[in-house]
Image (cartoon, rainbow, N blue to C red):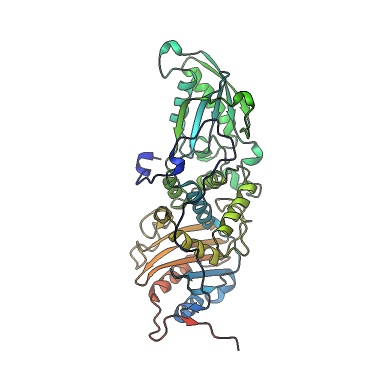
Length: 433
């Protein structure tokens, strides 16, 4: 990935400043940015009869496997089919984890990998899960460890290096299917991940690979590096409180570009790292609970919400289309809304939507996130219409023709915006009789 192409339009953020190398986990996270916009309040009593009828016609006899919600910027629920039924979202889960990360960390935040020298002279390699870290970065760390980046007189022949990494129990969410773990999309989630722990397929033991490549590169340069494994520190002992020396640092692309990698290209590893980094917790269960708390704090309708991972590969995730649509509306009010929307795929143009709706009335007008695992298809995002934005979420668990239905739904939303009723654009639901 070309970082220079990913970097654009940086905003100042409290976390754009360097973080002390001795900083412990969990992270010290600043409060989210202030906004004068109110939290979203959905108006379920107001809807568009023509759109509601069209949505039900679109799903037809498959209504029981669909959840569809359409909102406008006033919070009016213009159309809804089973919008309060929790379903498996697949990669629409990334809309939650990326919103959480953007809110907590800001668009300038960068993941860091550091080689540090402690006050006692010992060396440590620490990482935060940079998905862009590659072989060239590893070579620069070897140079720094052998002191070959500066004066030749300072170089050393043998180096003892502590590599701090998560225990294997944290590499995969426990509920990821074993078969998925062999593919690149199911690569282990580690702090020190060369090429996102994928080379064709998943790298099953990223620590051993890092050790082997590090030692081989040191040998090629005439030195020896003996690597010892250690777990990330939660606290440092009193004799380690003195500020360590950063010998070399590699940084990822900025947060807003990482969001694009997660949402536009649906990169699972990046989404998982962002959720962990936002919570400061690398145990996925604890990070998931922190994400759920954040969703609650946003004032969103979260009935039935269950966060099991950050990417959507887990089949234990549950979310309603009403929750996702309300999240999209909330993020459109957020101070960093432009970054969130810019991270989406675009119909007919970019990312996982590049080949969908090309040359149709939806081309270039829908920004969203797709989701696909066996039996699950979802698309949620922002549709620009003549009557302003529409926040649309569609999740199917078992549809026989999901792509066709989704295209029909988006066209219906555009067609009935504004609502065609000339007398009362938004009607109240009739009382049950």
